[in-house]
Image (cartoon, rainbow, N blue to C red; front, side):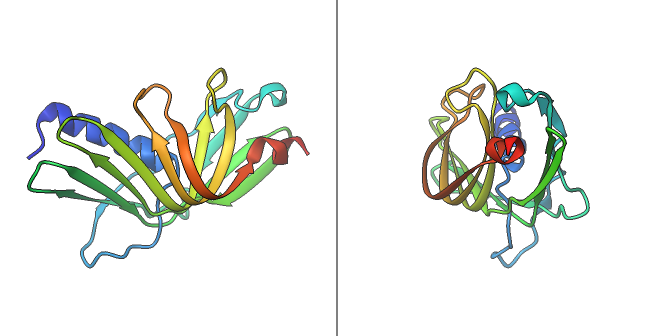
Length: 168
């Protein structure tokens, strides 16, 4: 059983992971716990383009999360379902399929890994090493050793720069 501190950390990661867009078609036999859509965020994510709004398409949202705990105490949170992400800025509105699936793994030593397959939507805040908005397709791994600045540590597949689409 998760302690309250680990549970809140796991739920926080689950919400953050859902925002990164790691959801997709369910493969497991039992039903998962519904995950609410992430909040709409606004910011100057694309430099000179001004205010950008990123939101989940509530009409298509049906994400779920399943939690599994191994004998050694490792907790795996699996995200499935469907998600579309809407990006508005610079006079444009773009919609992306940002379905995954994805997994958050919390180890007994409190280290965490996040991995997504399929489509993963990533927002890098201004002033961070990976500032901007990107859609990754393929296998993507997120480094959250610094929870205030989660970064993509590796990916195999394609990387679409959404800021360039908004600018063009």
